[in-house]
Image 1 (tube, rainbow, N blue to C red):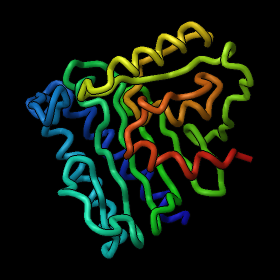
Image 2: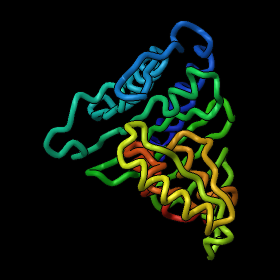
Image 3: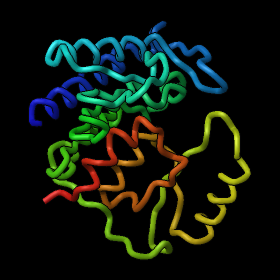
Length: 225
């Protein structure tokens, strides 16, 4: 599993470096992907880079990516599979806002074994291995020990598609009334690893993309030693 964890981190860091170099260029110009969501050539180039790094090391493994996945099939997570979001926070990227992340995870039969969330502009790299805990830039992490909602700093996000917005705003209203405060800065994958730091006590479900949850859920659920 060490080899998979190494590749996940290397691929995420390399893709992050590419996004750094491309910001402000033509490749960073956004175009509609669906609704209010944007995609850039930088997304696609980061996706290509991650795929190349993974398949060079593990040529028989499949890669499921947000940007290039062509639809679900039967048992898409059977066997060894890499789950990738080459850039979450494309709108942030297009507008020069630094909260952008790259997510790379390795799973076997639907169980995540290792994952990395890399925030290139913040110079933060969160890694996790199932059974081995989570780390930020190599330092062991533990989930916040906040026991009461009134003491919690909660991160959240809002749906791109706009559906069910009344329910989302009602949940935010309840959080504002009952918790210490609410933050919305990170792209969705960034909410999850930060719950393993004292900074954020909990993410709300709407603030997490399926890719981010796949990357982080299983390995980070195990506390660091």
